[in-house]
Length: 105
Image 1 (cartoon, rainbow, N blue to C red):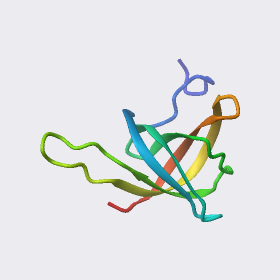
Image 2: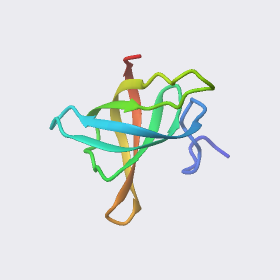
Image 3: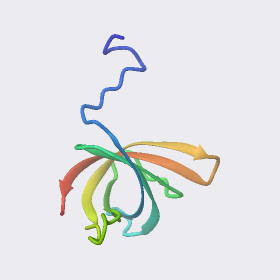
Image 4: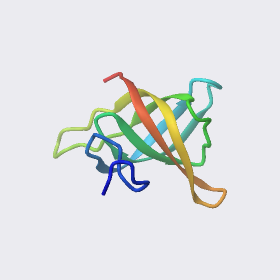
């Protein structure tokens, strides 16, 4: 498959499936939304929520990472930039693809 093929995955980082709760705050409007982080990579993540952001909008995201054994998980916090938003469930759930700009943890 050529790297110019429409189905070629241009993302460099390997993605890890998550399924963790996430808090999404628009840095444009100040509004807070809740959703789920469905996958995470070194330079980006995919979130699912009822929120529909603008392309290029900056968000503050906190992902609640589960603990391991008796150790509780430390939340992952980052400032991100919206790269895509696709409807998953008509009018209800959207998948937001973001690029991580600043890790705060």
